Structure formats: C-alpha cells, structure tokens
Length: 107
Image 1 (cartoon, rainbow, N blue to C red):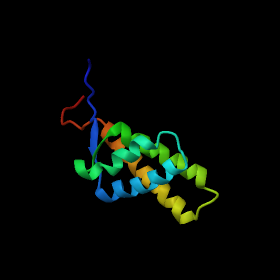
Image 2: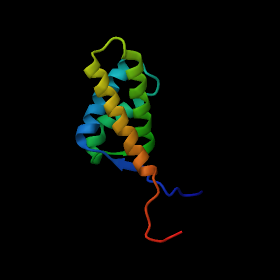
Image 3: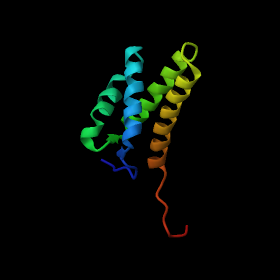
C-alpha cells in the first residue's frame, strides 16, 4: 500500500459542524443522494472533538450544494446563502488539507 501525504481527517469548528448537520438533515429529508453518511458523521462529530474524515466532509459539501440547487426557487435568499456558505466552508477546509505543506527548502 502507498501512503498519502495528505491528511485523512480534519477538525472543524463546532459551529460549522452543527450548521452542516442541520443542513444535512434537510438534504436527507429531501432524499439528496449520499446525505445519510455525512449526516451521521456530523451528528457524532462532538464525540470525536469535531474530527471527521476528509472524504465525508467533501461528500457533505457536495450534498449541500445539491440541496442549494434543488431549493433555490423555493427558499428565502438568506436561507440559500447560508446553505451555500456552509457548503463552501466545508469545501475550503477540504482544499486546505490537500495543499502541500510549505517547506523551507528551495527547489
């Protein structure tokens, strides 16, 4: 097996996890494909100091973007902005762990 230089988990702020769980509940209620796994993980995140697998956070971001797309015509703009904002914060967290670490050595 090969090892990846990237982190396999990341720790998120409690408020972001709670917001994501709320939105994922809506996504699961609308039967957005794949929302069940991240919903369970985000509900249990407090037990793990808000540390989640990167793949689950990435999946959650995608589910929330699908939810935003599906509800864009039926919810208030502020609700839509909030959903998209949570999805983008999750996506940014995933992107941050995929960035190579900076080294002091020159190429």
